[in-house]
Image (cartoon, rainbow, N blue to C red; front, side):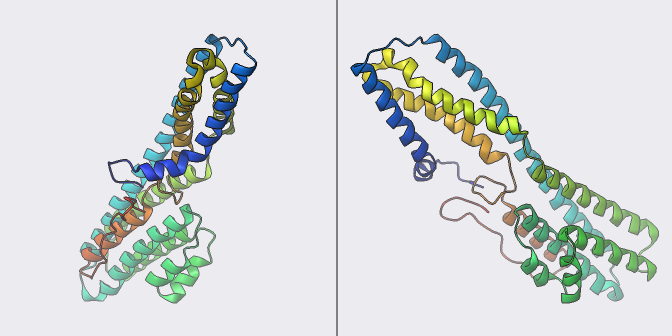
Length: 295
């Protein structure tokens, strides 16, 4: 996610120069044709078309942003729930006998969020899981089709073992299970966003209509702008293309792009908070790079 407030002209140009170059060439062709073979083009249909398209693109962009913001809210709930499960493990298992279980529950939760991050980005979570879990526990989780859910199931079994050994009572177990339910619900919401794209009409029709509008725009403006048509039409088309691109970039908040949610940073925040909760050394927080992007 780009976290700097100042715009980066180089990045903006790099992302939009190709469609704008094509649009500018088309505008030049239309302008040249108008002076060689003059034609009459009514302005009103293009104006009405542009107004309707602006409403359509605005509605689509709002829908995409709502998906992006819901993804951020779900990860906020995940951060809070991770802190809650670590705090419960620390407070409910203070005896030296439960020290190992407390640490294992915390490490499992850290492995869980890293595995979930990798799943949402369509990456293999093997390395993160093996780094944080004993090899036999990591192998059990990696055998599951949903690795993150397999780790969460194992955490529930560890809590049940602690209750059967008498380290926690049934009320404490129920409290910790309630936190696991919150974690599972957050994961389910993230998977819903990831696996359910916007309807096909929301993705295909705006793209077609926007490109049609950019093709018709210089034809409707050439009589008014004349030699300035390439500049004016390209700038107007750039605004519509920008709104179209915004919707495309926000529709999947968990993709591994500069405009998506900083899952690495949020997982690192969880790892730091949970390790410090049990008094262990934690890594440094992730910071934006020189390009102002936080992954």
